Image (cartoon, rainbow, N blue to C red):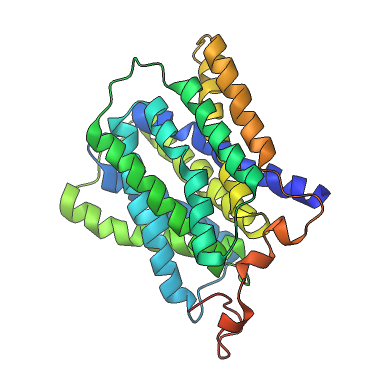
Amino acid sequence: MEANVRWVALTAIAPVAWGANYYVTHEFLPADRPLYGAAVRALPAGLFLLVLCRQRPRGAWWWRSAVLGTLNVSVFFVLVYAASQLLPTSVASTVMAVSPLTMMLVAWLLMSERPRTAHLAGAAIGLVGVCLMLLTGASRVSVPGVLAAVAAMLVSSFGHILTKRWNADVDVLASTSWQLTAGGLFLLPVAAAVEGAPPALSTSGLLAFGYVALVATALAFAAWFTGLRHLPAGTVGLIGLLNPVTGVLLGVAVAGEALTVQQSCGLALVLAGVVLGRPARASRRGSGRAPADPAPEARPAREPSAPGSR
C-alpha cells in the first residue's frame, strides 16, 4: 500500500504541472504558431531526457516511438496548443476532465483492464466537480476550440493506454524521451513549411517555453507514464483531475481570485473522485503492473521484450 501511495504522489506531479500550462500558453506564447509551439515544447524535452537516460530505441521501439510520438506529442500538442489559445482555461479543462472515463474505456478495450465501480463513480463525481468549479456561464465558447480540446482528449487517452500496453519492459525515461524526440522531429519541418520562420520571443516567452518544455513536458510526462506502468488506468485518469484543481488554486493564490461557495463544492467533489480512484488495497492485480501484459499468449515468441504487441 505504501508503494501505491508513492506511485500516486509521483503521478500527481503531472497534472499539477499541466494545471498551469493552459495559462502559460495562453498568456505568454504566440497564438498564431501552434506547430512551432508544439515542436519547441516537445523536442527540447525529448533531447533533455535522452541525455539523461542515454539509451536509443531497439527493435520494435523504432516504429513504436514513431506511433506514440505522433499520438502523444505531434497531434496532441498541436491540438492542446490550439485549444489553449481558442478557449478559456475553464472550458478547455472541463473538456479534458472527460479523459478519465475515456482512458478507462480504452484500457478496457485494448488491455482487458475492466474499470472498477469506484473508478467509474469517481470519474462521474469528478466531472461534476470540475463543472461546478469552472463553468460559470460567463465564458465565450469557440466551437473550433471545443473540437480541438475533444480531439486532444481522445488522442491522448488512446496514446497513453497504448504507451501503458507497450511500456512494460523498457525504461520509462527512455521510452518517454524517444516519443518526445520523435514527435518534435516530425513537427519541426512541418512547422517550418506551414508557419515559416520561427517566432521571435521575448524574455517572458523564452521563460514560458522553458517551463512548458522542462516542467510541463519532460518532468510531467516521465511522471505520468511511470504512474501508468504501476497503477490502473482508472486511477491515473482520476489523478489527472488535479489539473483543473491546480488551475483554480493558482488563481486564488497568484491572481487573488476569490474562491466561491460553488467552486469550493466543486473542489471537494473532484478530490472525492480522486480518492475513489485509489488502488484497491487487497488486490495486487489492480496495481497496474499485470495489465501491461494481459494476454501472455499474445506475446510474440521472437520478441520477448515487447509484451502486448500484435
